[in-house]
Image 1: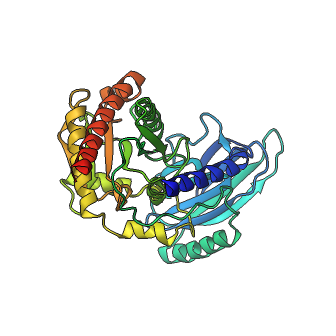
Image 2: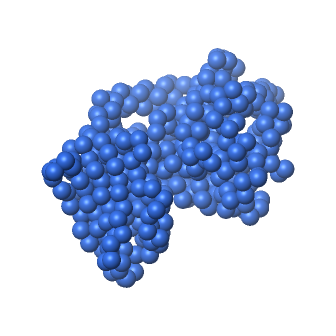
Image 3: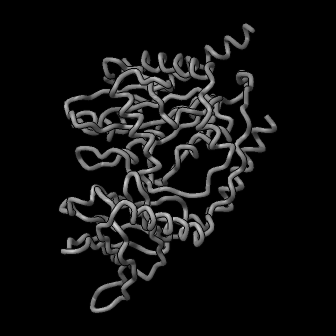
Length: 410
């Protein structure tokens, strides 16, 4: 208990010390435009003021990443759907406190032929201009290596306090009846990674953050649980950071909330996933593959991994932990079935990176399909999410009743 309190106090001090800087916003991106020219593709960002920026490129898949100080993005900022065919995707948002990021996905290698700032004049504010020209893979890889090296050399210091080390495997006994059980709730995606996009245009990252807050309220009102949210704002977190946050808090259970989108708009229903080296079906395998690309979707950060966290992703989850996860998933299916529509095979298995904490029973809950009109409408409803949260709380109660009963019997 003393060790747990020390860890939580350290985390609190880190958050408090970072707060004044983390909330500072350095400007606004008013608009983002893409122009197709005979020999290049030009990106223009209209700004409220001059801003420093850095550009680097990454391969497999091909990406151009633009980092700015922390900025706000005006409503409606961003290119429309009439973008050149070579631009597969484009997204932007908060990457971490102090840094906003734009990521451009390209269908083939492009060289950053020019990257410069235009001063304000003739009714225009300052503008950042990025010119992309087609190139060969070999030339792209050489440019990427140089740009990443320059990015690392000039990278501004992080505004957040240094994170405390991840503790070794806890291997602790179950909580006593008078101790609060610690539940970590992970709202998937965030910041520069929006996740799935619903039929109405709503982002998965916003749906699941709202669901996480509602579930936290449902659990805390019982007085039995202490709830940790891996993120409580629209910020990007790497998959390994999500695991590390739960482990540092000494979490007894880890729930990762998501809402998928698929081409089949008729399919609807929730499902629960637990970790397995072998996926239960092709759809589960594809979902895990897509979710595990979250770090790639957000561009990439360099030099932030610690050996303690990296080892979590390398090690296979302990067999006992996987068994506890599967047992809890069965309880979730039973409780959720009375409140929400579930897929025919509701409990599935796949190799989700976010479920690989070796000492915390972990499940990933797909709350429904944002590609389905009915599911999306429900997931935008606080009343529906409150009913879902109540079913999750009942399953969590049942699970820890069982765990503590078994501990007393021993």
